[in-house]
Length: 229
Image 1: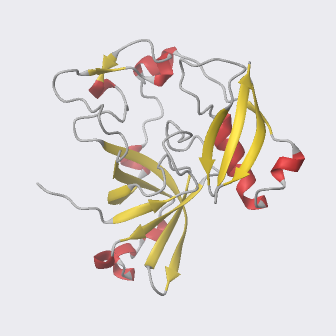
Image 2: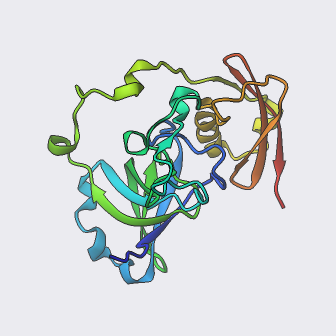
């Protein structure tokens, strides 16, 4: 079977670095689904406005060179600190035989664009800008919700978001509406789990800016925000 993208995702997150490790963790993060020309018609989304959440099937388009290929069938989940290996099919690692991702996102609104057709605005997606989307399906509670289910090794680990310090002079460099999403993304700790150097300065692309920060203990401090030409 050959599949082609039906849409592409548009997000302020311009690279893999900084992408939330699961959907819903940065609920303030706004993104948009823009359909390809064959699907830019209101008929394609008729009835969607009655749902609150959507499933997205998409491609880890930037996870190249490390996909499981039958030779190495284990990966290092970030939740385990990147030090323990688990079976690829027991994780949500982007390095998979077919590089397919599955995310549950909150439907914010459907925008009627005169040129792009219906554009779906969603919250909390863990997709970077430009991600190809292969399908969109509604989330239905009676079949999709299992609140008492076990979650394997995830149940055995604890993790709390970081406290984010964003000095006011730097915050003023960004649009006000972008600040909650940026703070939510930074609170998830974008660093690789195995890195813990309090003196290191990291850079994360966000919108048209390079956000630079360091992490000491449980506090992430933004040290600079640079506009990208």
